Image (cartoon, helix red, strand yellow):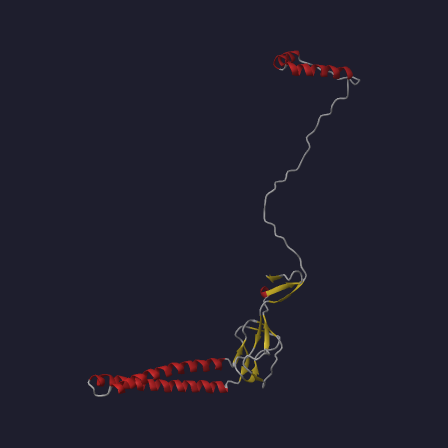
Length: 240
């Protein structure tokens, strides 16, 4: 039909049933329906459902990163110094090249240290011979002192001589070990693997034990042994 009229159709059976159960609701609906029917109006458009998105929130760890300006520097730097004094005979590496840990870098004249080692060995052998003689004398006097063939004083002197010779042998062994270590120190070895700097000494130079000036500096060349020194808050981070 034309016009702005609203037709309200009521099922009186339904109204009667509602009137018994909800009399106040029916009393409120009927005047409103009559008012709408009398005045008319535009039909109310149907409301459609609005599509919405759903997001599920779950907790998870978040890594916070900050970019800082800085520069990398080696984490391991070894300054090589001689541990014995002597004349430098050879430089056994090329400046600026990489070396391995334990690789010989310099050769110090080993002649005086070899002589000291040989002398210490000879002194040790002499002490061992004295110990053998003292023990034999002590063993010879032991049964004689029991039958009073020798005096107790002579036997006590023999025992003391054996003990003194034993101490001389221990001292001789320590001297031999010290001489051996000093002889080994004539080979100046690289303490770590890395790249060498410029050598501060050449062949023929006299070097001293534990001198203040390093012969060479070895810098670790591995990238995982570097660190980043940042100007911001003095932060230091290892580079992997």
